[in-house]
Amino acid sequence: MSTAPPNNWLFDTPTVVPCGDSSTSDAETLFDFYPDADIILRSSDHHEFRVPRIYIINSSPPLRKLLVQAISNLDTPSIEREASLATVQLPERSSILSRLLTFIFPVPATLPSTIEEIMELLSVAQKYEIYPVLTQIRDRIARQHPKFISPETALRVYSLAQKYKLREEDSMTIEDLEDKLDVMPGAFLYELWKFHQRARGNLLLDILGFRMTDLRQTLKDLQCSQLGCFGFPRWLDNYVDSITKTPAVFDITEFHMALTRHVVPSSTSLNGCSHCGSISSETMHEFWIALETVVQGSFGKAELFLSLVTGEPRSQSHPTSMDQPPPPRPNLNLREADVVLQSSDNANFPVHKSVLATSSPFFSDLFSFAQPSDDEVVDGLHVIRLTEDAEVLHCLITMLYPIPSVIPDSYDRVLDLLAVTQKYDMAAVQSSLRVEISQKTFPALTSTPAAPFHAYAIASSKGLTPEMEHAARLTLDYPMTFESIGDELKLFDGWALRDLAHFRKRCRDSIVLFLKSLLDCHEEPSKIWVGCLNTPRNRSRDQGLLLAGWLHDLILRNIRELQRGFTCALPNEEGLRKQYMTALQAHIRETGCSFCSRVHVMEGDWYWERTENGLSLAKQQVCFNSNVSGVAGNL
Image 1 (tube, rainbow, N blue to C red):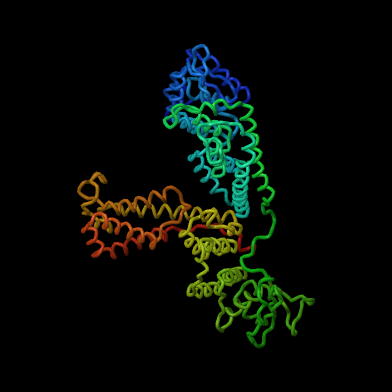
Image 2: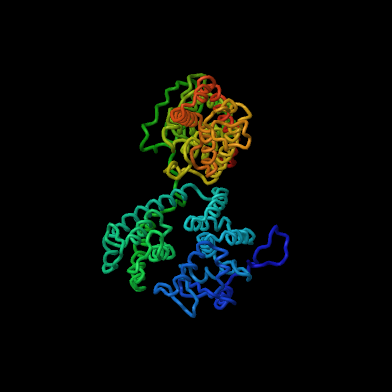
């Protein structure tokens, strides 16, 4: 490996030469005639690297296999020969291969100068299983200044990580983007998601048409030993079809890899395919241009409909005035009223200034000033125009007087009412309203997977922290994905989406800790499950105490699922108990275990009471922290 001068790191890593055009050419020419070269690596752009194969063989199992195959087939027509050096054709470009070799050979290591090439270099190291090099590259990237992953580059790195299947960079950018959601409104994320859906739909139809028409014309005389359902080489048909499922495979490198796997002899095809191996470069170029035109056209059509929301009004949380019934007539019969509150839809509510002033510092201050003489007057009373509609004002006024209060049936309208009490600083009214709301049920809150996300978005837009927390806890029962949130994503402010993701992660971590505690068979409640004779003895180093195997597997499966990510639905009491019953029944049915059957009958209810309480506490003890400062002031 490359060497570095002494430093304070835990281990030495290659010295990274500054990247630029000159370093590109230097890296490429460095391996044109490396000392003791006995193999040629040829890039996709026909640059040849003459190097000692011992370094390659010791670094990469896949490349070792290719080298051994090339050497053993020196005399076959499909492998080129030059001055007794075997040549291995690789699908990577010379600029990437040269950088990769600097991390393998004892020379100064160099990173590419662009994000795209760095990510491609990582993908090549991963593809060829050169894991020490992969670690070194990532180490160097982590030490870069400015940072490789920043708010400006996170989205680009994330898309490239998805393309090259680089899970570590994928997760790193997710963590970075998570803290930058406050500058990315949900409307933008929604439009990007819809663009992705449109592009995939277009691609599916366009690729189907290409396979039935353009592909037939481009490769009409091509022969192959393995034909697919459309009459074309199966490898080519499968590659074109794979683009519709994973657009990231639309890459010249992936295409050449597919061809190589088909042409080169393997365990499934001992002789390879000489027909496809002899396809002319002109035919391949013509095919690729035709395919590229189709794919780019599919994305182009999607772009025609892409309209990021900039300055457009947010979707309404409830029907617009055109869809609403006429405002109710004020029928409160409040005698001796001395002021009129007028709603946004022109309904008039005669009320008492003293009641408003007592309930609201806002109105108290308002009434302390002299009323302008040109104010509108209704029935001899001054009119105060408000931005709230008649339904909300009617409900609000019933909360101010000793009469039966009216609470909206729609949860969206309840949030509107709470926001009004907050806007006018009616703390006591808001507190009483929340008590009444807690005694009502709102089925719409959990009617669909998107419903709690909708409630959370609306509550956050109005600065209602308790309602945000209530809705956030309801969202834990559903996946936090584009598909589950759906159109409600447009309602989210970026900071609210970020806070929800943070809360969900903390709940996930708390649940994982609780589930791990259930694996401890020395403590309650799990120790009652020690004694199942059908538990494999290799499950624990402590051969004296073993948790029932089926229960151990159930708990461990949930832990691993949660550790993969936080966007899945988090376990709840009902769902976990169903898993428990299914696993227990399967265990008893397959083994006839009398021990587990007896424990369930005698202590199963107690066990599940403790487990459900523990799971509930694991979620409840996670605080919901949200920054809603300034939101209420913008209502």
